[in-house]
Length: 64
Image 1 (cartoon, rainbow, N blue to C red):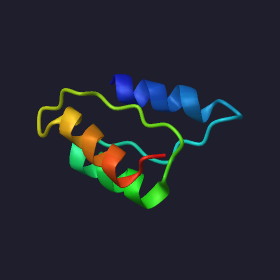
Image 2: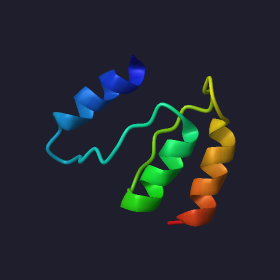
Image 3: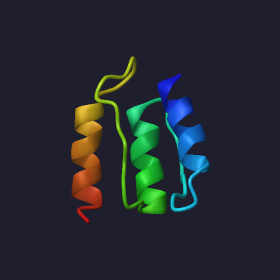
Image 4: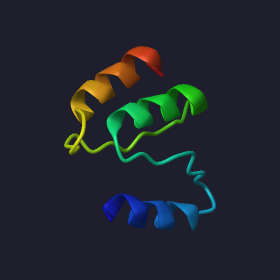
């Protein structure tokens, strides 16, 4: 619910482009690899997967 709400807020901002949302960390990592965003908002707790490990993988794949 929070992820969806933040998505609606960011879509309404002129200076932001929402490039993706994911309900599990593996999909989040794939979105980052495909779109190279400037900012990633990631929950560290997922029912399936580990957000902290996903953040590490994102940092290793896209250090900027």
